Length: 285
Figure 1 (cartoon, one colour):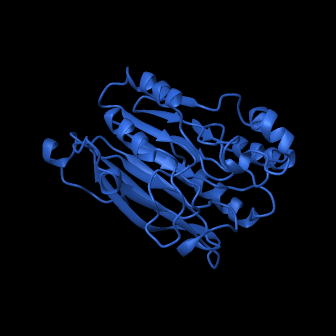
Figure 2 (tube, rainbow, N blue to C red):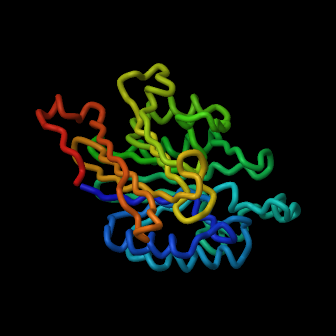
């Protein structure tokens, strides 16, 4: 039904690795996905030349639908006056004017939410009630067979390692809200390592009949990888089928000069899975 490439934390600027960026270009071109999702931290210090570089990067792939959201690094850090008065000024100039966006496709509706919090936090993010309400309005008219995807920069589930970082405030509220909206998957970055889990394994909440697939992407092109992905780079390839979500983690291997798959996962869609349809699960090739 739909192939999606999920990249994140490009960090154009000093941490950006040119050879990895070129390999990512090649991988996306080879896969030719139906949609490209970029979950924030496009730049390292939100400087004009960094935004110019990511703008040029994205132009290579403008032939395909794409969803982009800002990250905390896309807001000025040390330029305090700019941070207070126009925190997303350069992002709006070089990337897009809207911070919360929606992409409507035949088989999926993808909502992008700005989780940056320039006035209250440097690293951590937030989702407001107004943003959640807006997402509810978007998904209200979406037929049940169409995928409902959300992307934001900050994570809603802890990483499965000892390098813990703070979740978005009221992350449980957001997970329960998205579960009530029957969201199928949430794509995020920020932590610089890739992992995938089900929201029911993080916070079951009141709605235990609908789990959301939570997909984290590592840093796709920078030296800022963490934990098992220290100084490594990764991205995700998702295949959205009628009955399941198939996910493949790709990692860059310097000795080969390219990205290659390192793990794959498959999740049945709630209420549209294998048992209901009599379909056997199959792994992605």
